[in-house]
Length: 159
Image 1 (cartoon, rainbow, N blue to C red):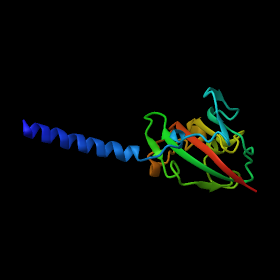
Image 2 (tube, rainbow, N blue to C red):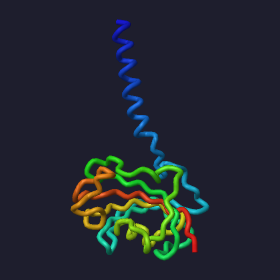
Image 3 (spheres, rainbow, N blue to C red):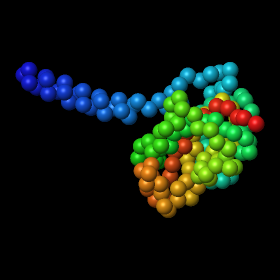
Image 4 (cartoon, helix red, strand yellow):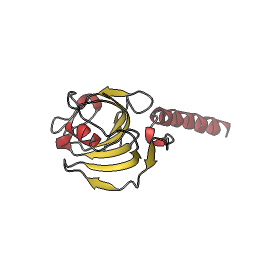
């Protein structure tokens, strides 16, 4: 009996360690919303003119995104087919700084920022042709013709 309890405890520890690795990613949607810079959105899916689906989680109260200005964002990319995270470097406290019109990000990333305001959070469902297309992105584990979920938070704009 003691051996069974020890074995099940060990199994539970191994399973918990695996879960902690995945759970160690801090998804910014789970962080408290600063209502001085954003307000909750109804989370209704709408189709953008580019062909991506947009779901606003929070409407920002700050400046409107401008593709010629420096953007500071947190983002997380998941594969829609499996809901597995594909790119998590900027999911927590790290910030990605870029100018959308001059940076080599996939088109769906640029389109997802359109109409967003500083403080806003949104999910974009990006079809393959606006993501990594028929080639995929093997370095991130994204296969050919993969639809992506792009979670974004626009933190700041610089002139």
